[in-house]
Length: 206
Image (cartoon, rainbow, N blue to C red):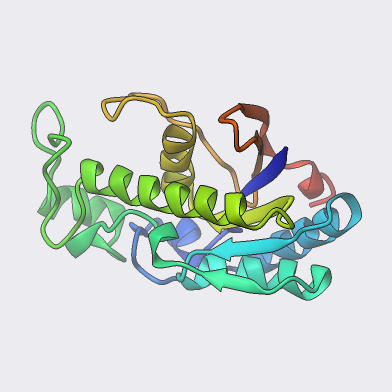
């Protein structure tokens, strides 16, 4: 049984500036860096990681760097783990984005993308692509018994859907707070277990 730890990055500058983040490459705040450090210390105390996979956006990379420094486990960066591409509104103030690019009545269709962005269908396909690569890697490398994925709230929710083979048309969303941790178990036979969702006990002192 392999354990998969799925982590969201710490608080980013966009979170406190009320800006649309997505592919906009904001750094962690001072609090976000502290959250990442507390997460890293908690992982070091409780889990022996064999691999870390991380989004290529800076807020995730800073979070993964804290984990890698304490655990001495190298990080593999993967563009498939980036947050949904929100196109022209990336980095824009949320109110400005809603004014300039209002959500259509009834919401955007799952196959439609905002200008320069990525549709929900494309986003889900990217999560499926990563999960398929991950399973292939773990099946071929039995020494990988516990892996950590550092990504983003939206992608983590998509990874949940892909991991559980939920239908492409799914309204299930799994929230993840700052440095929240989900813990899954996976067997090559196909058995999958959700052990925990959105653990944030490491932030109790903040």
